[in-house]
Image (tube, rainbow, N blue to C red):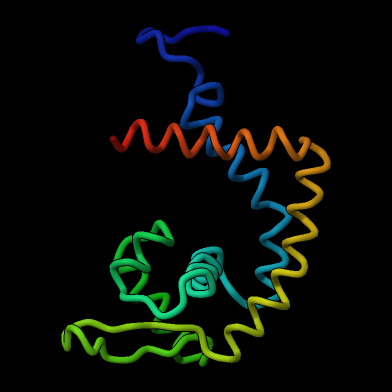
Length: 148
């Protein structure tokens, strides 16, 4: 592996490059399923977090979906208009909002999850279930170590 003048590995072999390549490999077969369902990757993340958490405030939603607040606001506008998400005033903070899945949103999640679960099972088969679980655990440990 050739080093550049700053002794950095080639980008594709760097930690960031490898993580990005892995994300792309994971998402490439899932993107057509999301497109068929009529949602973007970011919208899917928001819907998944809402499915996992139930009603949630916007800041927690943004943090959990790994999105910036303004992006969540834009994403929610579309999801609310499409009646996939319900947005209500936060009873604890009149300035904020609480969002939750609508029945249509839950149906979309259930239908799309069926296909994504099959894809995730294929990853597990190809890479090995134990290896995949260990990789996820190691990546979570890396995040924890970096974030403190």
